[in-house]
Length: 302
Image 1 (cartoon, rainbow, N blue to C red):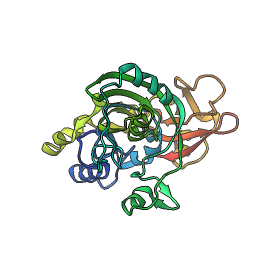
Image 2: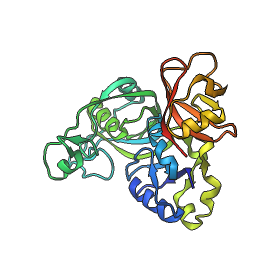
Image 3: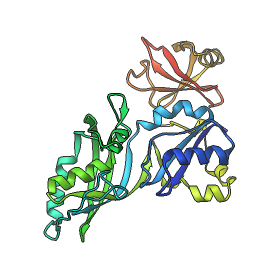
Image 4: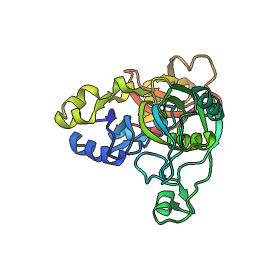
């Protein structure tokens, strides 16, 4: 069993919990995920299974889509509803839709974001959440992130409904907290649902409860290797080229019998990974362009 099973994660379990359940239900040892979801969050959690675990890096860097509810007027130490609430409460009756939309302008585009103190980011080799739990200073270094789209869907009774499309590494919890600071009333993330991640969305997902009730249903939702990363340019190889790729050797231009969309023309793109396929369309490897028309396998899948 090699490929991807997209789980619709419920709120509550950690991503690690879902991976452990996936191993047990699928009867496969090699299972990982392509991007952590906090326990509070629900939604799209792609599990890479078997040889597909070697492809995790190509999924985890993809953009993410979220539906979030941010509650104004209070703060927590984790920046979400699972944390310890501050004693003070700030009235938010006078915060308008226009106020929020104006504040959100500061969070669109490419920006530097500080991860939450309760996060897996390392500070001096120690996880930030370990320092925070020990009541030690825990402020991870800011990271550059990109918010492609940030839409205020509604603003009523102190609850903001946001729709977010962002780069990997973006923390919606930090957005909620920082937005509260900018509005002057405090805020925390009340709920979060990931609707897409790394090219997969809710239409591809199977609820974890469904998989647990009937593990055979997972086979219907399973995405096989040959259907993964189809947005990447691809080259179909000759038998000689397929053999070279299978052994991790450089593939030359003469080994390519067909260039699929994204790889047409005499030159190989120098900024994108390339799928290497055999003449039956099976995925052999992921390569990086080299000088001239050379392709060097960086992940071999057979």
